[in-house]
Amino acid sequence: MKKVIIIGGGPAGLTAAYELLKTEDGWDVTVFEESDSFGGISKTVNYNGNRMDMGGHRFFSKAPEVNQWWEEMLPSQGSPSRDDIMLKRCPPLAEGGPDPETEDAVMLTRRRVSRIFFDGKFYDYPISLKVETFKNMGLKKTVQCGFSYLGAMLHKLPEDNLENFYINSFGKQLYSMFFEYYTQNLWGRHPSEIDASWGAQRTKGLSISGIIRDVLGKAFHSKNREVNTSLIEEFKYPKLGPGQLWEITAERIQNMGGSIHKNTKVLSLEKDGNRVVSAACSDGKVYPCDYVISSMPLKDLVLGMNDVPSEMRRIAEGLPYRDYMTLGVLVKKLALENKTNLKTVGDIVPDCWVYVQDRSVKMGRFQIYNNWSPYLVKDLENTVWVGLEYFCTEGDAFWEQSEEEFAKLGVEEMVRIGIISDAGQVMDTHMEKVKKAYPAYFDTYAEIDTLTDWLNTIDNLFCVGRNGQHRYNNLDHSMMTSFEAVKCIRSGSSDKSKIWNVNTEKEYHEEKRNR
Image (cartoon, rainbow, N blue to C red; front, top):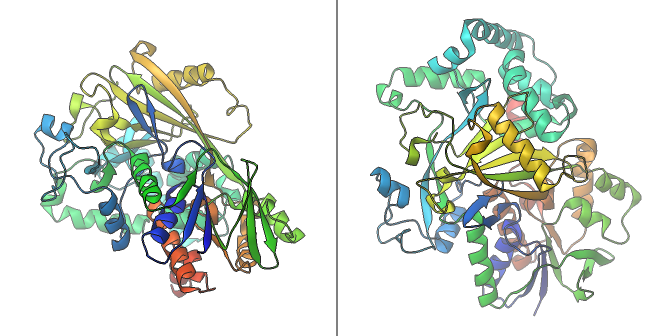
């Protein structure tokens, strides 16, 4: 029986384990997870009956196999959820599906609403050109943005960094308003220092010209003018948060004979030529293996192997990451007025998360957990459970704050930008920290292809997931890298190109060359 070691109990690692074990090929699968929970950044934290989604996770994919996988783990709801009942809404229901009021293993259908909060006002996310946008910006700024975009159309900058990519796409004025500060806050670097491929990946299909076409199209179809909020669509969401899916997956893995070691970190991998032969772990044991599927940070993976060429070690050492801290804040009510036509419990704003562009605060985003799932909040009718997100680097002054200091800052900023009226609205707070949440696109990232080419020479090593590939993958993309890795292992193929080609920017760059 072939031994497979899987590093990481997040989406990529657990997907790989499940996919291997559901066949009858007879794999000996062991998963090592360094924390005491499953899901990685997709975990759910339960604090006094109020649940926190680390980073916000919408379950939406264009890949049929991913949607089918989710449905297998958590069937779609067959009856309305608690807030739907209270508001007399009728969401899409699956015939014969579970009732979320009586069963926990259920996937809800939710409305997608996200906006930008800038200068005390809400803007669409992605930014759109419509009457509300012009009203918020005022005539002067609107004219400036228009001429700025025309200038960008006539004088294209070389897209060798993220700043130029955004200016070419939106014009310098909109870039300054909606991209520059948020990007610098997120990454801790100015956009001019970041590779343009990150912007291409996160704004696929989004440009001012595309927005204008969309707005003109809607202008001639009155049925599209009934909704006056931004970019509303549906997505799937586990009743008890994203971590619920991975807890269920882990349980099934163990039921199928897989072994999972929590609180166990893989410290190093021993290579013999072009194969990994064993893994040394924090439990003091060494585990022999025939295959390794790794979702651990690429930097740690390479630095933990023997016989690594000095050039590969240098590139790995220079790979940057961004960490973040979240403050859960339980409040009596929000000061933000719901000016949309979307009904919510307590008439709170309907957003799942809000991107904060205000330069007077360090806050990057805030989530309203009530809108993700009514079951994330212990007292849905009388409280609002908010998650404030701050980007930082492990070990810096921000990261080293005490929970008391962090809570004080977060509440002060909530009052400053008008999320709550005063600190007296706060009933409770809770701090969470997430390491290596975002693989960053600067420093030695420019040489990532050289490193991955070398890693691909190690026959039985497969890198999957966001950190495993040092790529800003969405949840479904991370899972798809594992699908491809498992196919390689089962077929005995040494061609790993399909694993690395999940969610690449080749199409974007091909379009650029063909314009």
